[in-house]
Amino acid sequence: GYIAILPELPGCSAFGENVEDALKEATVAMDLWLETAEKEGIEIPQPSMSGKSFLNEIMNMIKIRQTVTA
Image 1 (cartoon, rainbow, N blue to C red):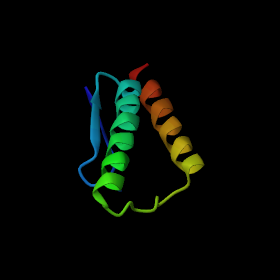
Image 2 (image 1 turned 135 degrees about the vertical axis):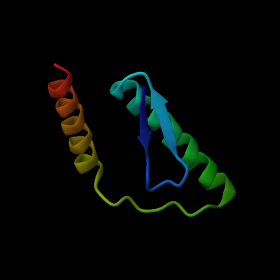
Image 3 (image 1 turned 90 degrees about the vertical axis):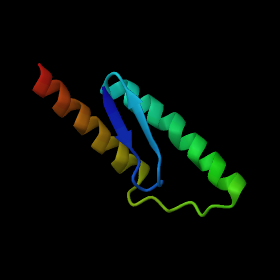
Image 4 (image 1 turned 180 degrees about the horizontal axis):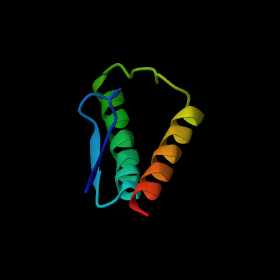
């Protein structure tokens, strides 16, 4: 299995049988973390990179994984 860790959101991580599942679960975990933070008055950190940069990095990681496992 795979784990997706969201380091900017303390304690936020997700698991999946493959990279794609881990990323899908990470989206759910992030949404729940942000919802809880808002309800509890926890400060939500600013992202260290833009959403577009993040998506590009994730896509590159998936391509690397596909190349290695091919």
